[in-house]
Picture: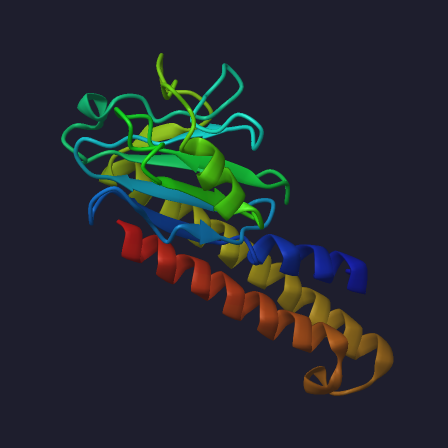
Length: 207
């Protein structure tokens, strides 16, 4: 028998989403420029020539460090066929930028869970040189086949989640003698199923 707490945990897992960001498709800009993501979510950066993406501290715009994520130079993306994927591990703000030439200073910046992007962009104007170099780090460059595998894994995970919540619904209904449709477990099951389906739909769109 699964407790309501377990069901809610499963629902949280199913809430994980895949976000998509276009890097330079329409010039020196990220689209969307900002997004809200939860722990467990993934962000897929679609890279367009000649851009890249790197993160930096709010206090040091346009300067990636060894602890920053970095997609590497555009030349390593197989002409954009590979997407840069990062996993979100907390709700802390993440500021990112394009490290090509003076793109960052010109305003090509963005953020995840941020509320001070205008200030970050303003400070970036005064940076003499953007720093984003070295190997890919903090994420992975994935082609379509790898993204398809992630989608398949998400499908298997969601099927397992729905099976567990279905069992929890039956167990709860049996214990309380009430109709499954009237129990909190049944509500959780419907929510988990809906969110899992949404994640799969986004993953399918990306590949």
